[in-house]
Amino acid sequence: MNDVTLESFSPPITQDLGEFDRPILVFGGPYSNLQASKALLEEVARLGIPSDHVICTGDIVAYCGNPRETVDLMQESGFHFIQGNCEENLSNAIDDCGCGFDEGSECAILSDKWYALAQAETTAEQKDWMGSLPHRIAFTYAGKRFHVLHGSNRDISEFVFPSTAPSKKAAIISETGADVVLAGHSGMPFTQEIGDKIWHNAGVIGLPPNDGTPRVWYSIIEMIDGELVFDHCALDYDHEAAAETMRGLGLLEYAEALVSGIYPSQSILPPDEIEKTAEAIPASSLRVTLQDV
Image (tube, rainbow, N blue to C red; front, side, top):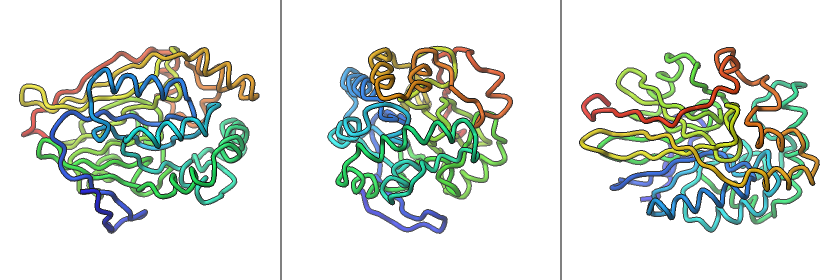
C-alpha cells in the first residue's frame, strides 16, 4: 500500500494505493478556488466517503484567487493527489504554468496573471509538498485496475477532450495497463467506453466547464447491483464570493467565467467542444457490467 514503483513510460513515478473496498470520489482542478474547495469537503462529509477514498487529478492551484489557502485546505484533507502541470512547474520554479496553451494565445496571456499570483502566494513548504506528489496513482476496485493521470501518460499537459479520437484514448489506456483511466487537465466531465475499457474525467471544481452555468463537477465511482457506475455530479458553491476575491486581485476574465460559466477564451478547445459552448451539462451516469470492462 502506497509504495512508489517505477514504470516503463515517462514520467515514471506511480503511487500504488492497493485495493479499494468502497465507493470512490474523484475530482480535479481546485484551481485556487477556496469556496469550491470548501464546498467539496462539505460534500465528502455529507456523503460519508472516507478521505482516503477521495482522489484529485491535479492542478490544486491555477486560475482563482486563493492559492495559499486552497493548498492548506487540500494538505489537511487526507485526500490522494497527483501532480498536475501547475504543481510540477511551481515546485520546479518554472516561470509559466505549463498548461499547454499555444504561445501568444489569449489563454497563455491570461495565465501570466494567475500563475504569478500562485508563485508569489504559495510558500516554499507548499511548493515542496506539491513537488512530492506522485505523477500517477494506481489502484484496484471491483477487480479492475485503475490508473490516475493528469493529461496523458505521455505528456502531463496533453488535452484529452470528449471529442479526442477514441484510438488515442485506447493507446493511452493500453500503455498504462489499466482497465480504467481517470484523467484530468481538460476540465470537462465525461465518461466514455473505449472498447472494453473506460476513459473517465470527473471534471474540475475550480472552474465551470464552459457550459453556461456556474456549477462545477466531481464524480463517484461505485458498485451498484453488480455494475460499476461512474456518476457525474454537479456541485453548487458560493461562486460570487470566489469571483469577488478574484476581481480584487485583477483576475477579471476568470472571475467573470465563474459567474457566466463561459471560458474567457476558447483557443484550447476543439471544434466539437466549441459548438457546445453554453450548453448545460446534465448530471449523468454510465453503468458498466463487470464482464464488459
